[in-house]
Image (cartoon, rainbow, N blue to C red; front, top):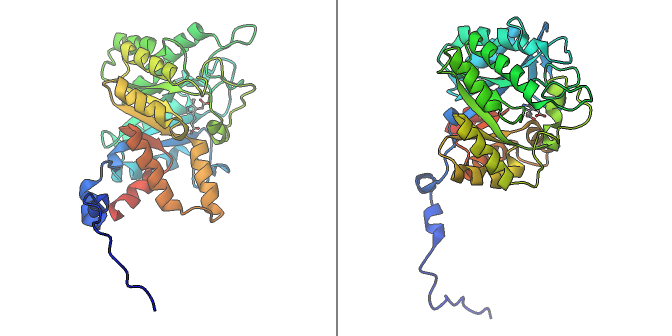
Length: 334
Ligand code: PBG
């Protein structure tokens, strides 16, 4: 004889599950949105390429030719993405990164190409840093004894900002973590009447192992590490300090980078400033998920959307991600 199931005397009166009953209800109470306009696609353009070149450690991501870059940016605009972040890879590099400032340098010509192609349809942003252009791979110029020279680098950044602005960029993204970089770039832009060019500052940027695949993406020849200018991964208070300095120096948007291992820093920064906060879902974060998916260990598309939603939930208004175009295509289906 089986015992009859006895209902409990009283069930819970408070039932959070009630609001999860139907897709419509779940949609209504969703706290975090993910929309194409919040996503920025980083793109790489390489000087002298005949055809797009795949980046082995970043499946589906390529170094673009000047022509294929325009197709990618046009598609990004059609998808309603917030922006594109341009990275240039010159065919020759030198100690001071001359190609970064040369108006005929790859990044400067690519900015002009893109702006001519898409106009105001999407925000055109540029990585403002020397590391893609220097033969030693550091983000600045070096002193005679091989240290990164903060203040001489600032002068180069100011010139680079002027070159990007002359090419028509909407927003520059100084990513070299030199002290005072936002201020010198803002002053240089303003002195040249580029008062409308805005600055997305890589403010809390950590010396991270998750930049690994990016080094292949930009053919970086870095010897050593960036720990004298990028932050120690254990420091969150310092991330807020760096961010507040950038806001005081005139940053229009601040950024935390990487994103996933630094979700707490994103939240602290969001609570500390009154400008939009961006986060960069970097190459190593991308590669990890892609590698797991390629092995059948993770369900790729839901994992991508969950990743991006988590970065938004942590407090990022804007997310830079190599999945931007794909995520924008996936979104209406949710
Ligand atoms: C510096 C820069 C880097 C990245 C973006 N801008 C490399 C670095 O600081 O070492 C990394 C982006 C990524 O890993 O996706 N120009």
